[in-house]
Amino acid sequence: MAINKRVCRLSCYTILILMLLWSFFYAGSVIQWTPTKQPKVTQPQTYNTPNIHHLFANKSASDIIQSYFINKLLKDSDQSKMSAANKLLKQLFELVSENNNGTDVDITDDLVHIQGTGQLLDKQHAESDKAGEAIDTLQADVKDHKNEKATKIRVGIIVYMPYRSDQLYEMEFLSYMHPSWKYVTTHKTLKQFITLPEASNVPDMTLDLITYCHPKSCCTAQKANCKLWTKVTLDTDQSDCYYHPDDGFPEAAEYHYYNTFAFLRDDNFMSRAKKYDWLIRSDLDVFIGPAVLGWLPKYEFMSGGGGYASEFNRKRIPEVAARLNLTHHGITNVGSTWYGKPDIFMKISQLTLKYTKHFYKNEFNKTLDGIQHIMNKSSVGEWPTWWRPVSLLYGGEVAINHAVPDFDISRIADKKLDYPSSSKLNILSYPHLHCWHGDEEFQKFRFTTKLRALINGGTDNRTTIYKSDQDVKNMTVRDYCTFIAWNAVANNNIIEHLQKPADHCS
Ligand SMILES: *[C@@H]1O[C@H](CO)[C@@H](O)[C@H](O)[C@H]1NC(C)=O
Ligand SMILES: *[C@@H]1O[C@H](CO)[C@@H](O)[C@H](O)[C@H]1NC(C)=O
Ligand SMILES: *[C@@H]1O[C@H](CO)[C@@H](O)[C@H](O)[C@H]1NC(C)=O
Ligand SMILES: *[C@@H]1O[C@H](CO)[C@@H](O)[C@H](O)[C@H]1NC(C)=O
Ligand SMILES: *[C@@H]1O[C@H](CO)[C@@H](O)[C@H](O)[C@H]1NC(C)=O
Ligand SMILES: *[C@@H]1O[C@H](CO)[C@@H](O)[C@H](O)[C@H]1NC(C)=O
Ligand SMILES: *[C@@H]1O[C@H](CO)[C@@H](O)[C@H](O)[C@H]1NC(C)=O
Image 1 (cartoon, rainbow, N blue to C red):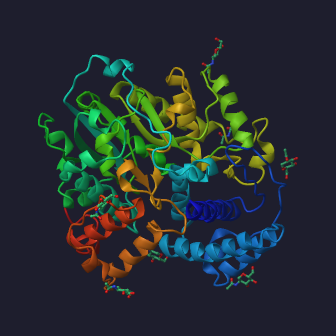
Image 2: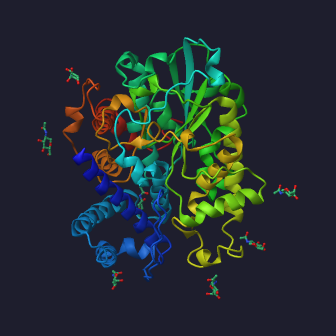
Image 3: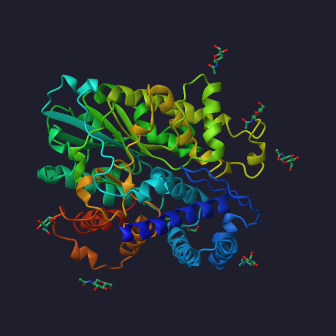
C-alpha cells in the first residue's frame, strides 16, 4: 500500500506536469490547474514563451521548459516532489519529442489522448487503487437482464484507426488493441479465474473487434487478418476482427476526432449493431484484459472516467446545455470509453457528434460573453479551463447527461474502463486498460520509440524473451500489457509490415 501511494503521487504528478507542459506550449501564457474533486484555482502566472516550432527546433528546449518549471516549482515547499517532478519532466520531454516528429498537429494529438485516460488526473481514483473496491456487479433488476436467461452474448468493440504518416495508430492497433483482443478471445478458459464477484453470471461472450479505418491504414487491419465487415454475416459464435474502410467526415480535416464516429457514416452499421447485446467504444492505445469476459455494466450505458473538468467548464458546459434546451445532471469528467446497449449507444453517438460539432464550431468564438478573457489567450482557449481540442468530450458530456435518464456518478465505471496500463494490480480484475502518459511502464511512448528503432534495423532481446505464450493469471496489469505488446512484435511480423509503404495491400 505504501508503494502504491508513492507511485500514485509520482504518477499523478507526472500527468499534471504534462498537462502544464501542454498548456505552456499551446496557450503559452496562463496556467491553471484544477483538481477534480476539490476545486482549487491557482493564481494565474504569466510567462512569455517561444512558439512550439521554436521550442522543438531549439536544442535548449528542454532547458527552457525546465527552467520554467523550476521557477514554478520553487514555490512548492515539498523538495522531494520538486526534484521528482524535474526528473520526470526531463524524461517526458524526451519521450514526447522523440515520438511525434515535432509537428504541433501530432503533439496535440498525443496530448489530447491524455483525455482518454483522463481519470488518471483524479487523485481519488488512483489512491483508492485497490482490487475489489467499488466493483460494479450485475444487478438483477436491470430491465434488460430481468427475463434474459441468455447463455451466450455478443459484444462488439468499436475503434477507429486514423492514418498518420509516422504510423503511430497502426503501431498501437498491431501491438495493443488487436493482440490483446486476440489473446482474450483465444484464452477464454481464463474466465474461471477472473476475480470479479459476478464473473460466473456473465454469459459466454462472443467478442468482436470492429475497426473503422482510414483507407491508408486498413492495410494494417488486413494484415492482422481482420475481415471486411460488410462481407460477413454475424451468425456464428466465432469472435472475429472486422474492418471497414472509411474516408471520415469532411469536417474531420479540421478536427479529426469526429472520425471516432465513422461508424455513423456506414449505412449498414445500424442493422449490424442490433446483432450485438453490447457495444464498447474504445481507442487504439487500449489493451483488453481477460476480465472483459466476466464483467458487464450494471446499467444500459456506462462510461469510463475523463479528466477534463475545470472550475470554469464545470459551470460553462451546463450553461451551454441549458441554452440548447438539454437536460444536464451536473456530471462532468465523462470519459470517451463507453459500454452500452446498441440502442442507447447509437443515440448517444449521434448526439455526441452533433454537440461536438456545436462546441467546436460555436463555443470558442471570442465574441461570446464569458469566455473573452480565455479566448484572448489563444485561438483554442486554454487547458483545462475551456479548450477547443477537447470539444469531443464537452459534446459527450452534454449528450450523455441529456440522453441517459438519471445519469449519475455511479454510471462512470472508472475502475473497470480505462484502468491505467501502469497498474501493479492483478490483471484478472481489469477488463479494459488504457495507456497513459506517465513515466511508468507500460509506457506507450517508450514502446513506440523501441518499435521505431526496430523498424530502422535495431534489435531488442524482448522479441526473444516474450516470444512464447505465458501464463498471465498472476501478472500485474503492467506486466500483462508489456507481455501482449512484445509478444505481438515477436510473433506477428509487425516490423516487416511497418517497413512497407502504407498502401502496399491495395
Ligand atoms: C533557443 O532559445 C533560446 C531562448 O529563447 C534563444 O536564446 C536561442 O537563440 C534559441 N536557439 C535557436 C537555435 O533557435
Ligand atoms: C518527420 O519530419 C521530417 C522533417 O520535417 C520529414 O521529412 C519526415 O517525413 C517526417 N517523418 C514522419 C514519419 O512524419
Ligand atoms: C429552446 O426552447 C425555447 C423555448 O421553448 C425555444 O424558443 C428555443 O428556440 C429552443 N432552443 C433551441 C436551441 O432549441
Ligand atoms: C463569431 O460570432 C460572431 C457574432 O455572432 C459571428 O459574426 C462570427 O462569424 C463568429 N465567428 C466564427 C469564427 O464563427
Ligand atoms: C481581450 O484583448 C483585447 C485586445 O488585446 C482587449 O481590448 C480586451 O479588453 C480583452 N478582453 C478581455 C475580456 O480580456
Ligand atoms: C536484455 O537486454 C537488456 C539490455 O540490453 C539486458 O539488461 C538484459 O539483461 C537482457 N536480458 C536477457 C534475458 O538477455
Ligand atoms: C498464482 O497465484 C496463486 C495464488 O496467489 C498461486 O497459488 C499460484 O501458484 C500462482 N501461479 C503461478 C503460476 O505463479
